[in-house]
Image (cartoon, rainbow, N blue to C red):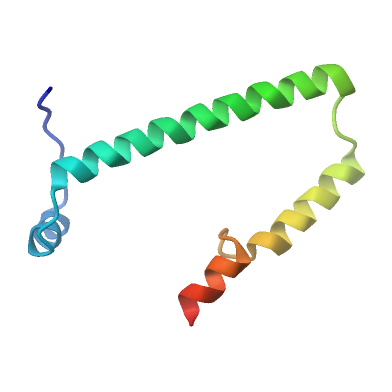
Length: 89
């Protein structure tokens, strides 16, 4: 297994140690999640390019309707509305 050094703010590291967290395991998990997220974005971008090639670009009115729907679904926090409601309760 490889060893690397990372820079973490002192207060953040102090809080992690107080919580008895395994910083190495958390850092590895965060890297894995970020790589998975980027792979999913790349796959989605590729799929959207295929759709554009097959069907043509999305019409402006459809794009505006989709953006309006997303704004309503996510709310101003950028999180799904149901998740935001449970966090404030």
